[in-house]
Length: 319
Image 1 (cartoon, helix red, strand yellow):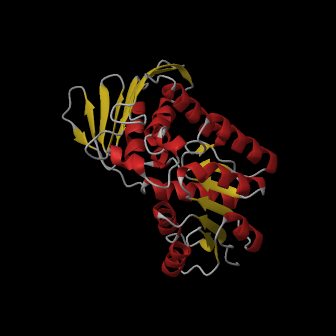
Image 2 (cartoon, helix red, strand yellow):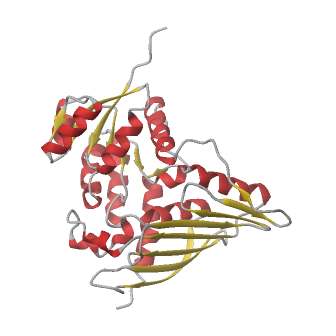
Image 3 (cartoon, helix red, strand yellow):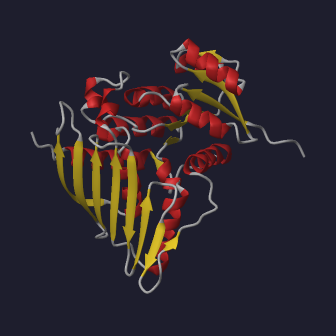
């Protein structure tokens, strides 16, 4: 029997997130990274040497013109994700793009429509959907009955807003950069469409929106509280899941405890792969098997829903 053909992947962006994807891709025996692209010659030369990738380009169009790929992984700065993904999706190339999928719901809808026209598979790299601790916590609640309430938090220091790569429009909407991870996974865990949103957003320490708080009710009556800021002393991410007589508390995304009425708290355990590896494997399997992107992943229909929720939260801006 002949050996299965390797999945040919191009990686766009050779910064930290690009290296993050390349490290995972290097672990898969059925994947060949056939080209990389980045505006920085130094960045792509370093990554090319580390991962043995000879075909190097300064932008996505040149890579797609000269290298045959089955899929691309996009790891560009946040404000470039949508315009870069539009190029590969329009050409019918299956695309895993970093978050956010756009700087607005409308920009994300355009990506969805481009992919629908070309037939390309589009998936957003919201890897908390595959995080082993979050997956195990959700399953533990489900074993006891329906989910009732969720809490999601993601905080970062305000200095992270001043990244020189970011335009002013993104600096004033940094909810879409990192905290969007928790917004998306809470919406995914709720398992229902949003019914109502009540939010408060402030510019507390400077010129940019840096405090966000929201109370959300979903159509299935799950209630979620979301809290995000760029005023903290350090990066903090945490989640709570509550059912009837059972709760899961996740401090960070690398562990947690299950609390059940009548029992001592139990540390969580899992043998699932890390979220980024599981996410990459899921996407690549869909590419190889010509399957549509579905749950638990975030296809572009899912991405539109998350972006609509972000916009509903941001609408709570107080002057």
